[in-house]
Length: 187
Image (cartoon, rainbow, N blue to C red):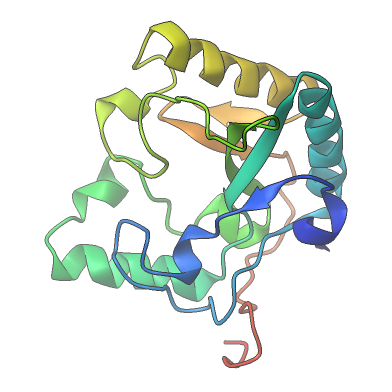
């Protein structure tokens, strides 16, 4: 696994699950600190994605990458507590997740000139039909297609239901539960 902060030159990191600005409204287990790790091949490919987008005046913002297994279990508990197990049944949240194997990354685009996020038509982790890759039109769809094209060009596979989710092919990658930060023991 490779730390994306050390690999990416100009990326922004808004690690959603390390704080309350995510669909659960609370930091998830395993996020004692904000972090973004990805398997080596994926991290190297993301460096190339960043270079390509930077040349076009765009940057990336990373919301999530490797996710400790305990964080996915936290999502599962939360979904049960609030009556939202449909999020698993409908495929919004995988259990286990490819994120738990360091194979997936959630990201978006920003303008390098202004730092402003590009309009993607729905927020990250919005469990609505507009989050499907082709669930919007106009400028938001164009922006999604720019992100998708760059990711595909460097070996990432998209997820049709989530415009922000991409993964690398590494079926042998083991399930991991190594937390971010030193305040939590590995589980």
